[in-house]
Image (tube, rainbow, N blue to C red; front, side):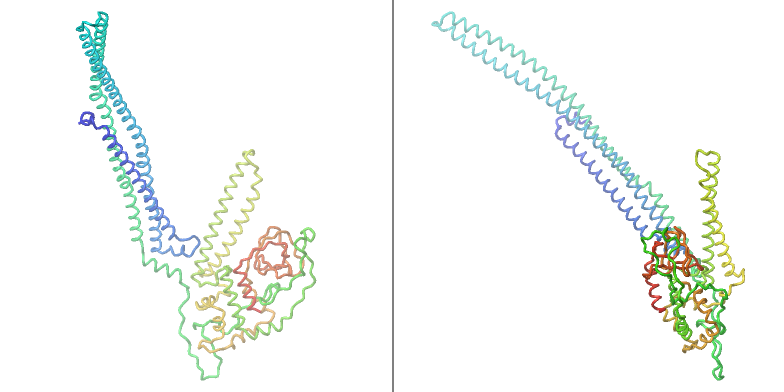
Length: 616
């Protein structure tokens, strides 16, 4: 079965059919291309979906993923990300194995088809030319035969006429002979042309056209085979990722089966356990006897001990001030345009004048609830700004133990990191010593010294936090302020100032009382009250600053700073040219505003202003 023998006269139809085959191939290429775009779009949407529900770094969501159910959900998100990757693989493989290959094949197919049909048209043109030559030879032979007949008839007529001269008869005879000769020549030419045409026609229909059509047939069959292979590849690309997709689904199932409700319940206990014992029975208060009302330690109200004042520390820094009284400042510094060299030690100030404190002291001594309100506000502000106690003493025992343990682990990691850097620099120094051309060994000494200092500081920090951790775990005796506390005391730290005030002014039965608080506070000398108050609640920081120049604070109330030193801002410039800063818990004072570059925290600044208004 050959197109050359069966379809020898269907040149035009074959041309249309092969063009249709190419159109089908291009349509299939377009179909696969759209499928790859769908796969890419689907993979992108799956990745975006997985990313949308991933926990944000350094957020509360990260803590939630310690539960097995949340971890299973996280594993599902990760597997969905891998699942999306398999759809990307499908798109890539279809693009490279089908779309790309078929696109190149279509271009080659078009060129081959064009070449075959060009040869066919050329063969048709050749046979048509031979036919035209045969027709022309035939018409010439026919014309010459007719001319020879007419010349013969004219000669016979002239020969029969007695009136015609002998010369005219001879001329007619010669003309007839010439025409007969021309007819014979035309006959011979026509015969030769006919034989040639028959030979060409035979070659055309039995050799050239069958060969050309056979090539076209083979080309078309290759196209059909190629599109079939592409369809198999289309299915195979999907089949190849099915095991991986199945593995993703298996992992999701495995994650779901790993959910442990008992473990999650235990984690809730570890997360929120305070470590306190439940309150005991409330003691009976006998009002039949004229005796002073007492408050039981086991009461749920805010305990203040057994009617005794809180322990006071004798050695207090005299640089501390009342939180509601501004520290006297030196005179205004020179303008910002003045160079540090012109005033290396800053402006000189006269002796500070002390404000009278008697009326404010008396006011606060007779209004203890107001002090507690202010303390609660200040404590809440410090916690909100992240300036809580370094030893996490504001937390319940169990939560404090966990925080301290986390801090110790973080410090140990930092120590290990610093030690790794030191080891690397030590090796680099050894290389420099052995090969001086590679670098100067002395250039790393400063950095090694810094790393050594950092490691020593971190080790001291670890010892400090391990000491606090030992206290919590009972390995060391507790400090004075680590008396037995109830969970209600910690909850009161986060309540509003009004609730705190009301709680300080109420007795266990809800009635208003100030007797105990006044009695306790009157036992404290007036000189120690200021120090105890300020030490317990240091002013919160409202930003940071960087020293632009070195300032030697030689005047009362000032503090010395070095150029480039980073410090904390606790009071901004009020228009007098001075800014109050803190280096650590025991070192604070004023520096010229023009000597530092201040970076204020807007939220902390606003809340600090509101705190000052309340204190006034």
